[in-house]
Image (tube, rainbow, N blue to C red; front, side, top):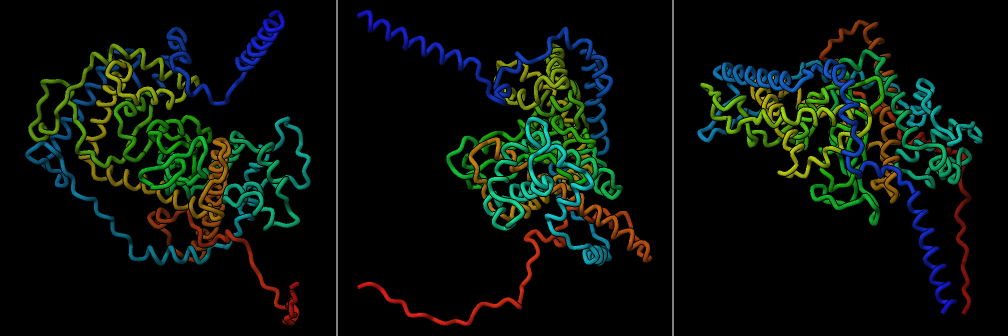
Length: 537
């Protein structure tokens, strides 16, 4: 009996020891699943920051002035929309109060635009993709971020060349084995695996992207495509091998995989990417890319697809100083809100079927500002909050407050949307850029159509590798385009701003992504001499 009690005691001591080891275990990224309220700044810690933050983003720093400003803005926007309605030939309102806009027509292109583009493409030098990585690293020196975790010098012969091979193999989805087979004598499979596992992580790849973006921004040609003040967010499906933690079957794309959710600048360069599951609402991550982007390009305007039309997102974006301009597919089904219940309008009154609860916004103004200041201080990301606000719980007063604020901002957006043709044109033009970027990424990933690793960290790294290659190509193209345009102007070509805006850094006709192939006609096999084969009976 004593022996049995001793064995039971040993068993439980062992279990207690194992449990104590589990207590000390740390899981990277686990804080994103915690309760955001436990990570917020206290209101006492927010108050010293409040005045400076409100002045930076142009917000009143007390709830009464905040409400008064919003009411004035909404009243003025509705008044102007009503006054301009008789002159707005593209807008009509049917008997049920549903607005309709005429389809935007494509602007006519100048007759000489195609000839100009053809001339530019003909003059562009042909570049090998590996040479592009070499050139852009020479300019930006982004491989300086790579190396062992200890910070010591890499114990590799010619480390820069091997780092470039690792970027090429992982970013083009070739894999270590295929990369080593096609670069015999330059790198081997084990070296590539060790470089990816020990010398390159997500933070280092993001630092490399930041260097490429900053060099890209220096060229004045990019300003004809965009000033860098706007970003476009959208996701695209990436196929994954089955049986991994992140992969799911996507209903719309009809395949198994994940979503590469990108933020690109209005001048085409890729700013940030989150790799998320197919079942996740993309709008949760719509603001994260602007916060996690640390380059010199810091946009304050965000374009997005239909998932960006959520009322809480509009409310949070406003408090963060971000102008949200989404492309809304069913915009005429959403509710327009009056600035106050007594407001009536001569022409557009049928649009409005809701009222703003200003008291709710005023009551929870401090709670909302506490969250915004915590985001600004780096305590939490917007996605942590939007995951909670996406539940649409009627009992969640914070959700209701952000939703009410978002109703004001979305109504302001819709009033401008139905009133300004140029505004609608700009939204369509900007969201088209991210679709072109997705096509560009598909072209880069020529080594395969599936990310074959099941590790979520490695899946995110593959997307960062692809973005490094994409940004490197864009930087090289901008360098070559600048030289070509200077050469054409020296020869007497008259180049207009409209012609420059028609160009794109996504040019790929001049890039040799498969390498340089040649045939040695002096080396021939022996003549055919079939030999008989004998087999054992």
